[in-house]
Length: 305
Image (cartoon, rainbow, N blue to C red; front, side, top):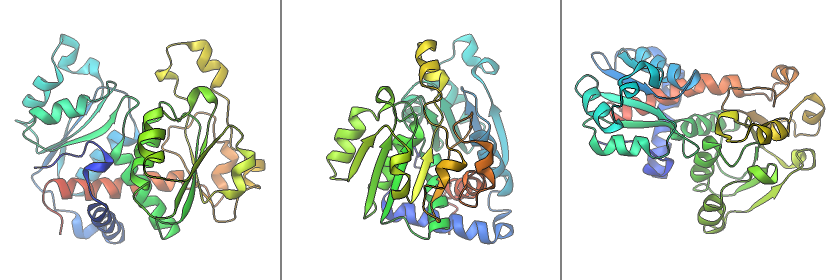
């Protein structure tokens, strides 16, 4: 039995197999419509979610399985004081696999230690979001045709953005990757990412505050929202929330084949006018996320070809 808690839990070869399977599912979803007949996924979401929770549920339903779980801490026994360890032991009696989102960093790891079914980290605080990383890599590979030799711009909340932390970890394993980290000084990537991942692995990167100045360099622009729920000080959030707004004028500075990705939800960091630009790939990214999670579920249940 395996869990999926961190992008580094899988080797590059295993990532490539996952992405190949996701591609096969995308090309012929009907072939996989009954792979998980009789299987159940539990979606344990202690924190609000639209895309990730529904994506896991749609993935299992599209594989022929079924879904159970809860969508908030208030609707579960955690509101009565039940621990994560006890919850996962109970859920292991009902389901074959589980996806957990939790506001506390490390909670899915605690669950995995006590679980008798595979646990997928669907986001733990500001730490990691590995299934979103799988989505991001699949989107990039599908639309760019490669995961090597790319300049990736990461823009917005790089301090609390768990999608950014996971994506940096995963992409450092591919050749020719260079990062441009675009954020206000208060929201720069944590030192452990900068020191223990980028510098230790000799990955080229630079940190800037101005988006316009680096737009022409980028192959991928990964936008993130400034996350109000991660701030302890509302005044600080208000000061930073409009730091970056991608609009049509900024898009004119970019390469003709640059892709814009975003893990969503969007607030106002991408103007609606950008949605019609063929380089805007964030809604396609949602669709690809479902195929990626179908591949992940199959793999962890030992049902992959």
